[in-house]
Image (cartoon, rainbow, N blue to C red; front, top):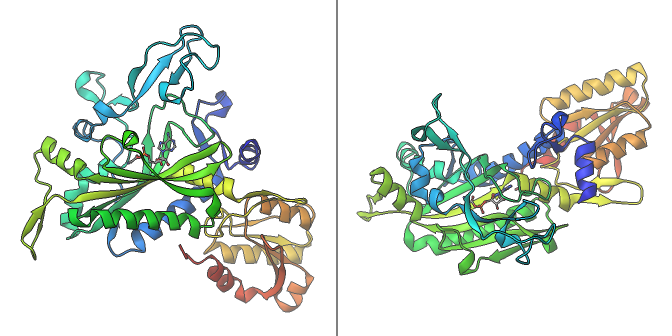
Length: 426
Ligand code: GAP
């Protein structure tokens, strides 16, 4: 884990936020490569979950919502963690994360647990008064439930259908940590799938399978990913059943995504609190019902950490991120074999051409071996070397990251070759 954190820092993938001021606990910035990687993960999710399916649509709802949303959803009352303070060193801990009833740092006596709400509060407008209190959303899901009727009506949707979105969520976690695994500001990719109550069980099983396969299709090692069913006493206040998709991180098995059978809890609550009729009327069967929701909720940051941890390899002569080409931040790097004007000019022209469709980089510094290593370390799947033969016959060397094999291909074929190798297959 330390090596991975250090690689992320060294290559500007992920690093502490506001570092020039000493950083701020558990807030992270994503540099150029991290931003590309994050976008690619979100794009792969969006393609698999929204665009690639005929029954799901996307949304992008507001982070700040009417405060009644959180009363209706149960978050104001139930979205809490048990917090204890050490009476000696004053540190705070989540009571359910402790192994004993003494402070893990100094052994001091702990206070009795009290419930601490994880939602961040702020004020809407210039007056800081109780009536103006609003919350930063702790999950994107409620935005979907609050907009469900409008989206369903305007899109003429009929259950079963899904509404998905990707966006920031905020939780004032008592004990954030493990790099970007648990932070206070993070992104979620959530799908709420609305079905007739009779088909909920089948939809739940299908979504568990679809989501588990998504990770495998993106190259995650099958022996390091598992599905774990929640015990009754673990279930969130809204869930009838839930499974976690877990990954074996260097710090143990941990949740990366939850798939929950939310029943009709959310729509029923919002119907009650808003007074809006949220039922669906089926014209064919003449049945009116409140759809049941199957939810898939994955964290972008945790997923990103999963892909990094899973693809990080230290070999005898190189460090390599064997990340799926679809996710790789940079798809190809172009190298002139030497800093000769004719090679540089040709390499720059190839870079410019590929840049129209792919994320590419250009590197002319150091030996070609070193340049390959630099790209291996950040997971660039292809290296394209321009040499004197390129000037003569228009061919370049195409080097593949994992096998390190090299083949001679014509420049005119590069676009098509890369497109075929990088095509969305997930
Ligand atoms: N809408 C359901 C929901 O939010 P959750 O299990 O609380 O369920 C879903 O969160 C996912 O969001 C988690 O599996 C995790 O990937 C991500 N997540 C939750 N809290 C997080 C945190 N503090 N930091 C990073 N990711 C987090």
